[in-house]
Amino acid sequence: MLGLLNDTLSPVDQCGCGDTGFLTSRTLPIALNHGAGKVINVPVYSCGSSMCDEYRIPSAVASRLDELAEEMEAREVLSIVFSWKTSGEDDTIGYQDSLIQGFIWKFHRRSYEDAQVLFVINGNALVLQSKLDPSEYYILKRLEESKDGIFFSFSKFIEEDEELTYEKYIELEPSFQKELGTVEMEEVEDMLIEEFGEVCD
Image (cartoon, rainbow, N blue to C red; front, side, top):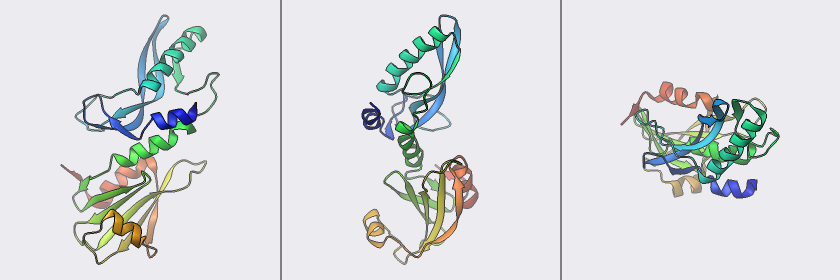
């Protein structure tokens, strides 16, 4: 079943507003016979815009929410963490990869004051180009998961080609990167703003 859900939960789909939506998780209210309940960490598609509070629930998730509502009523609880299995087993790994890829894809084509995102690689890495010196490029790449959380490495490389394409990058695969540090997933947005300035529209 998890394999099927992996295919169903694409990292990028459609937000409730009709714009491109990125897979993320949020707490959703749920009406129960014994009161107002909530389900935590529900996978949804959201465009991520601060002006939009819409989201779309994938169909596989919607049917699972119905099952969770029944379970909550049977157990008379008002709060539960979303999972694909019963009896509270931890099986979030099934869609964790899609959630992380959805997080990365939302940076696609984003522009900051001093840099712009050129492309996303396999939903696991970002390549940015400096606006101040177009020969400077930066890579934000997902590292192997550790028990401490999800981390990304942040590196820099110089390339004389100021119009680097995805194909050229793959061919080049810069081995002369200078690592600038590692950053936790929750701190990526703040780090990029601190490094390159505010997001430009």
